[in-house]
Length: 285
Image (cartoon, rainbow, N blue to C red; front, top):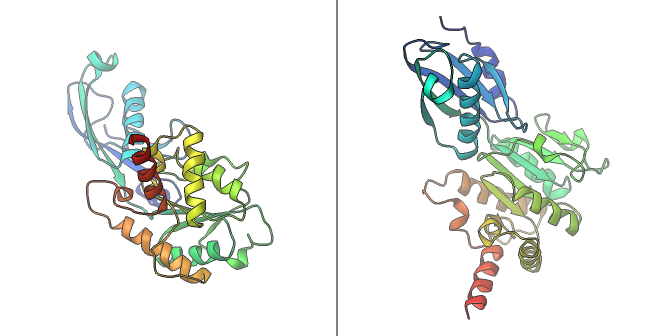
């Protein structure tokens, strides 16, 4: 017997802030806890095991598929998981199950650290380009609902806030643009440990070079730091906050539609990548 799956609840999950994977039983043999067509949604909500809706049978098989679904959400590649319940998981059912796991496409997330003029401009443009936008800033004078569209989710901190509660995934875009260099550095170090599609730091060439050195001093590998783009945005001679936001959104759009196998940042040539290349050449010499 296949348990009924609530597609309306699935739609609500897709409209939420967290990535969702759908797990579907596509093949069974022998005795199994669920049959073909059974479905379970797994939500990567920042907790170690995520959250589930629906079931593919419970027990060890459900635990295994739950973990695999979180891997799919982190890596972006669908998987077909074939499992012998008795020999591989020790389940008494004794049959075999094949479960297809796919990441469901929802709006990509844009997390903006900093609610100043650039942050506000980015939020407006992010909504217009169909991102789910989050803005974090402890300054009450800036993080005011009237400064943002209704769709923007406002977070009243970025220093003590648990970043695990934010929707980091391979569909997450991050811009660090706070009012304090030390806070920027701390946020960059936290973000680099998270999955993301795009991460950028607003600032000068000198700030980008200092960020590289500070991250290296903290034990980050060059390959990790190279994922960060700084100065943020395309070089279009932007001056005003709106223009700077346009340059950043343009770079994000490039990343969003990047179709090559290698990650977007591999082809980026911001000051971060140049500084890392220079340091590598100097160390070889």
